[in-house]
Amino acid sequence: MPIRTAAQYLDGLRDDRHIQIDGERITDVTADRRFRLAAETMAGLLAMQHDTKLAPQLTYTSPSSGDAVGMTHLQPKSKDDLVARNDAIKIWMDETCGMLGRSPDYKNVMWSAYAAAANIFDRDSFKGADNVRNYHEYVRENDLVMTHVLVNPQVDRSKPAHLQESDITAHITKETDAGIVINGARMVATLCALADEIVVMPAAVRWQGTETIDTTDYSFGFAIPTATPGLKFVCRPSFADMHSSQVLDYPFSARYDESDGLAIFEDVFVPWEKVFIHRDPEFDGEVTAAGQIYPHMVMQSVVRAASKAEFMMALTFALARTTKIDQHNPVQLLLAETMGIAEFCRTCRIAAEAEAFETEHGIYSPGTRSLQVWQSMFWKMYVRQCEIITTLGAGGLVAAPSMAELAGEMKDSVETYFQSVNADAKSRTMLLRLAYDAALSGFSGRQKLYEQYYLGDPNRTQSMWYRSYNVDDHIERIWTMLDDLEKRYG
Ligand SMILES: Cc1cc2nc3c(=O)[nH]c(=O)nc-3n(C[C@H](O)[C@H](O)[C@H](O)COP(=O)(O)OP(=O)(O)OC[C@H]3O[C@@H](n4cnc5c(N)ncnc54)[C@H](O)[C@@H]3O)c2cc1C
Image (cartoon, rainbow, N blue to C red; front, side, top):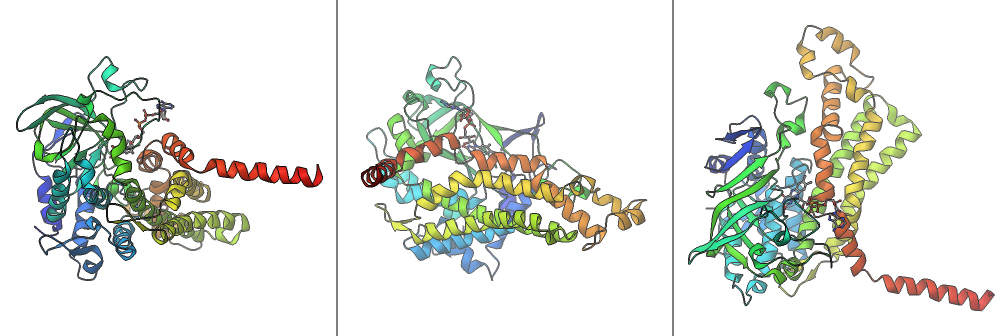
């Protein structure tokens, strides 16, 4: 099947998946008030692939079927390929203001990198290479939307899972000629309600030297449909739980809440052909680095962040213009700061593309330096962009009424008293509601937490970067300079 239409994607979600929220099991996520609009947003992204103007950028010709398939599955064979893939990501991300972390491109670029490095999965304990390659082809040719769970649940972070008193953490409980059986839990399954497939792989980021390797029961990598029997997702409460008349009051909460859930495996059967890693704890810690996966994940993130930061900048400009505060120098200082953040993301993308290189796996990887810089800075910069919006929106953000007031019994007063020098009451109220949702709402708080953690705990990732940096050369430079100063003036 080539690229899917919106209707085909939505139809695919009407299966037996077990989605639990607010104490109830959802029978049809596409009809439920908490998931419906986000499902339509995702469907809209897939539909864009059929737009005749966008198709040349969002699709390419499948090497196996000759059909049009999603561009973000492309395994870049040149810098131009990498740029083309990033352009496709940017088109999708501009459409959703960078607010969907688990849009299909995120996992697509990741799995295309795993498939390019598939040989590393042929291990003594298990030969997974063909399964990894076949899975890449399977999701590409069927235009499937994936999510993943990499992290063990937060039970006792002072010891590895197999030394803990409970057996809450997902582990292998049985093996047959046909496959393995998994019991226990993993977190966090963002998009679980709206993904077709879930990939379960080892955590990409670990505490160096402090974590004892788990026993082999906890070592596996596989992928299964989200509707697999025994697989259950318990979701947090939704930000989208509102009447449709309130969508303009919470435009992001209503349409872009991709949902997060705990994945619970109850006797979940995984056939061997969908297993990638089996009882190989040493490999768990190496697979992400050996496959050179991280640069692709972070590259997608940088492009997404560029869309997000540009949107936040645009929103800040619009807000400041409505009451003409943009004429004041201190306000311009803040506007320039948010501009700097947007330009930072754009520049990191350009640098990563410029430094792209061919890896031993035969594909082009983005240059890692600017990606690491971006990863260490953006999550804090994003909080700052929200802060600039709340600083400049100030009391207006909480004075803004719901859009219903513009049609209510005080309509005339609202139209008079909520206008500003550069906007009528309706435009200004819509803008303030959007700014509230982007920078101050529960949805916005979750976005900040997402940016901080979804690529792994920054405490870990940043200390990994520090440890891999050529720190000694820089220290040497200081001592050389001091020696020189001492010789000349001491
Ligand atoms: C919004 C959101 C969406 C997410 N979506 C996904 C997803 O789709 N798929 C997925 O796999 N994961 C997802 N994650 C999970 C994410 O990967 C983890 O949050 C991240 O790896 C950190 O792990 P943790 O949350 O278990 O924190 P913990 O490991 O429990 O750490 C909590 C705090 O304790 C500190 N800490 C823990 N251990 C130590 C130690 N040994 N020494 C010093 N300090 C320590 C940490 O630095 C941190 O500040 C998501 C997270 C968020 C917030």
